[in-house]
Image 1 (tube, rainbow, N blue to C red):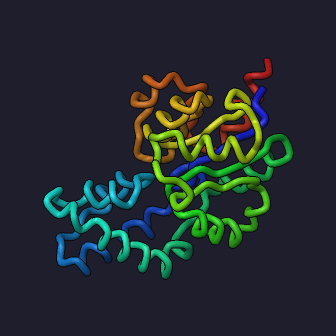
Image 2 (image 1 turned 90 degrees about the horizontal axis):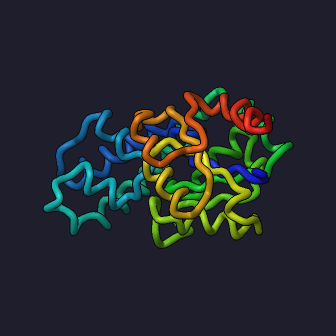
Length: 217
């Protein structure tokens, strides 16, 4: 029986791409490196900042990842929360599910930034646990963050469901022995999720409650 639902944040509950695009290109510009396309930036959402830098730049610049991270965070502290937009279906889904399940968020985005966005949206109190990028050493697809959230809820993994939009989310759930539902609101295609045998694949977060209800019959 599912007693808790954990969500990824970026591209699962919210579209933060405008802020990420702004912050990545700000950092690259300050470093004197070439700007990257919006499409390429969107492909990095959900990665750690080091992984993001290696993805959008020549790997020869890898030793400058700390500089990139510092500049990204500097700009993100100024603009990220204001540019983030919760998906319309997220409000309704969270309001509906909070009365039935223990809710939480597990993301590579910094926890304090997620909390700022949720507070603005009036949703912060709906989540019993939030594990962000600053709370773990190993980021997804490593299961550390998911297991940390499960431990905080004091529940066994088989009573927890994780909902996310990326292959890293799917692999982290698999490695944590947690059931996974894929949502297609990010950049990952349906076919890419199938090798992880998800409990379900939905187009938007608004379909989650209906999927869960269908399991009861």
